[in-house]
Length: 246
Length: 313
Image (cartoon, rainbow over all chains, first blue to last red; front, side):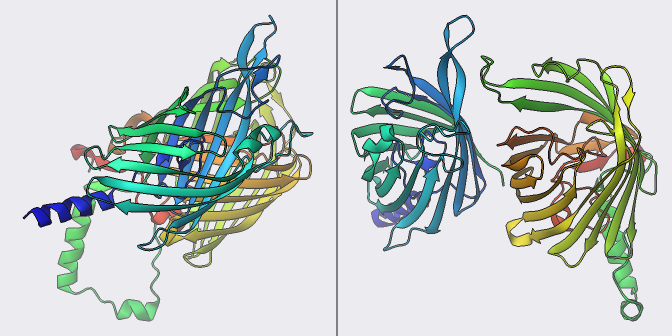
């Protein structure tokens, strides 16, 4: 009887699929991309508070002082093998009265392709890019900044155990903006989805420059929350509405 | 109004037996309960939607400039696919400034007629005041090659007409046209189209769109080129507005059938622009009644299921 109960639990757990809410609105970890994909038809609409350590160095600053900011995004998974997202990150600029306000923004598109789905013995593979349209290094002649421009390849493999699902993620990415280059190279993370709280995921990642930890959680089927600490002390958090359009 | 797709010798081989008659009558009785067609002959729909526009210009201390209009309208199905429609614009928020009037005004007043030609082609003729401040005559057509390929064409002879600040009009001599193929990938509920031609501000260009149609939402990406505005790209979201189960009367009050949102990477307002000839026109539902030679998204489940009131069946 115990064996059957265990097998049923194992089956239920293996059917679960939770993807983290990344600050770009795409599935992933905290700052690190993964090869997990949302289900076909999933759409996300949300925002993320970004600690000043979370954004590229030298990007969101005023008179040499970095500031916290936030972003808003919308994303869609039209097919199970592609995710598309659009993100705007707020800038602070002095207004006519000289007061510092969030009145400008940096905009970028994201894309993630999943040519290989996760199998029993091999990991899922994803190729992706953020800020890939009309972006160059620094400010280009059309006003695009390219702060978030990066390309990556990621692999993800999940292991199911009695106590939950462990996700192992590794990625190689390349940023172009000088202030983002600290996140270049091999990055990765581990996720854990406990069996007693299947709507929650615990994340630890190496972003290439620091170790981040966080939790994401799905509430009432549609509300995704993610809270994280960068280097164990700089918080970021986001809220997202997620629904399936089918 | 559907035409038979059976040839004469096939019809002879398909004589209706009494058993088939019973089945057919039963089916028709059942299918009469929820009616799938958009509007019944003689029906009048009064509806209201929202026209949401935003633009992103730097250095004005605002994240976005917003232009929100209420767009109440009326449609009268005059039988035999004749339809009269009108739409009024009621400005609610206008941060676009000069050139975008705060006046309540007539935006559209159109008389149209749709008809099929054999089993392959459908045509829609329209005349009147169209959207985008154009008036004149317009013809739209679709030639269906097979279930995944069709060719669409549109031509219009229009002039400028705006009631935004008094009465302004020009003579009706701007010829616009668009032509191109459409592809329907049924298993992916995906529609792709390419159109090339001349747009309302006289520019020549090409547009390519790809839409994934979901249950009540369509999400698409597009890219375009105009000899004046050059490259543009972006995405479109079309949301069919609830309620999805509706009761149909002779006169119906309802929300607009859809809400459209377009994001343009380029901010050029005067290129690749086209007018609408229907107050509820959108890329999800296309140009024609969905029950007239259904093709592409017309073959999906309808957004709205209508239940006729008992006394009107």
